[in-house]
Structure formats: C-alpha cells, structure tokens
Image 1 (spheres, protein in one colour):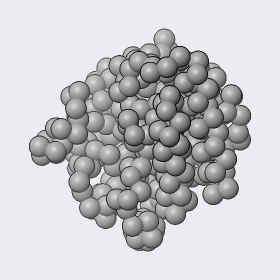
Image 2 (spheres, rainbow, N blue to C red):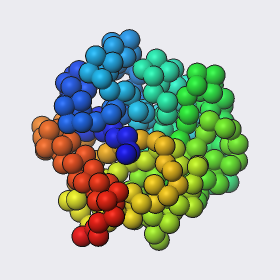
Image 3 (cartoon, rainbow, N blue to C red):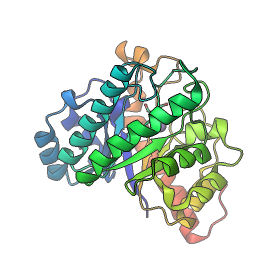
Image 4 (cartoon, rainbow, N blue to C red):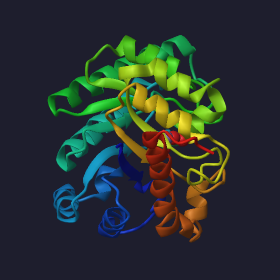
Length: 283
Ligand code: LER
Ligand code: MN
C-alpha cells in the first residue's frame, strides 16, 4: 500500500489543526505543509500530527520572484538560498523527510540571463541548500513544471540531469501528474525511467481536479510506481481550474477542495490500488 498525503496549499487560510483533523478522518497518512515557515508554530504542528496519528510527508516550497535560485542578481540568489535553508529548518522541526525545491520562480517563463548561466546558478543554489538540509536529515526533491509555468525543467529527464549535476545523496526528483500530462510522452514510462531518483510525487488529474475527474489514467501510473518500488508518499496537489487559483480561494471559492475532494482523491486512488493488487482489469 502506498502512503497518502494531501497538499494543504488548497486549504487556503484554514487553521492547521482543522486540516490535520480532516486528513486523519479520511484515512490519510500525512499532510504536505506549505513552505511558509512564518505561518506555522512548528512545535505545535509536531504535536498536532502526533495527536491525530498522522505525519508531515513533505513541504511544498513556494518559489516566487523573491525566491529565484537562477536569478542573475547574486543578492536575489542569496535570498532564495536562505529561503531553501529556512524551509529545511522547518522540515526538520515538523519531522518532514522531504522538501520540494525548484530551480526558478513559478510562472517565470523566460530567462533573464543566458540560460546556461541560470542553470549553473540553480545547481549551485540547490547544492548549497542540499548540503545544509543533509545535516538536518532532510531530502530535497527537484520538481519539473509544465512549459506555461517555467522555461527551465519541464520533464523528469531534465530534472534528473540537474539532480546528477547537483550530485548529493539527499537530492532527488519528483513528478507531478498535472505537469507530466502536458509534457511527458508517457507518464508511466517517465516514472519507470526515474527509478530510485523519484522520491516524491504530486497527483492531480489533467484539469488539476481530484483524480477521476479528468482524463488521466492512473492505473498505469500506480503500476509504474509499484514497479520501481516507490517508497515515498503519493501526495494530492489539486487546485482550482484558474490561472490564478489563489484569487479564486481568496474570494471564498474552491470549497469543494476541502471535505469533498479530500475524500474523493484517496477513495478513488485506493480503489485502483486495490484492483491492481487483486489483478482485476481496470476500467
Ligand atoms: C507548481 O505548479 C507546483 O506543481 C507546485 O508543486 C508548487 O507550487
Ligand atoms: Mn506540484
């Protein structure tokens, strides 16, 4: 059986205890927290997850203009590296084994300098952050995003190439089925090719709604994860279908992402997992 968690990014503005309580109620093993260290009392979170019998799977770091590891300005890069380190501290404090790292800001769709220089700066930044995180027993996973969110890493093979250049034992990669559906020729094959390098994964359907609500076939994806003996969490990261999902949530939209989709995600994927285990034909 896979371990399941849910990215609390979509529980916008909610008290963390309510989120943890919901995830425990619907049978999740863990919560993915948002990489905003100032928003959490980490001691309290550690106690809460333990009280509700779940864990913190991971931290979903937020890479914006202020946190761009590939920025041509060294002062901005330093700021981004400091952010990676602060999230590593937060990960250790809440007991999360993995934190997400991205080489550039999300929604930065073209380079500000020569791309080879930007890639080199990103590698240096991830390496410095990774060395810091290693001392805290925290792993970094490099996430590839689709071409409308970044110009740098769009596929898992590119993330693996960067991971190899960073060259640290605690730095791996992750997939996100929403991005992979756009960029990979074959999602299951990309997972198989990643093998041990794949240490985390985000699940969402093609429209970023709960799996089962779009057109991704999750059976071959789960089979590929079994084949590589995937040991990480399957984390649902679903968001409103809008260019500015947070604008939707700020206006009070996205209520279905709380109880409704939280339950749908795990029930749907677990039912496929069970059918695979029984050897049933998946519809
Ligand atoms: C960005 O699209 C993404 O997939 C997240 O994991 C980070 O916000
Ligand atoms: Mn993601």
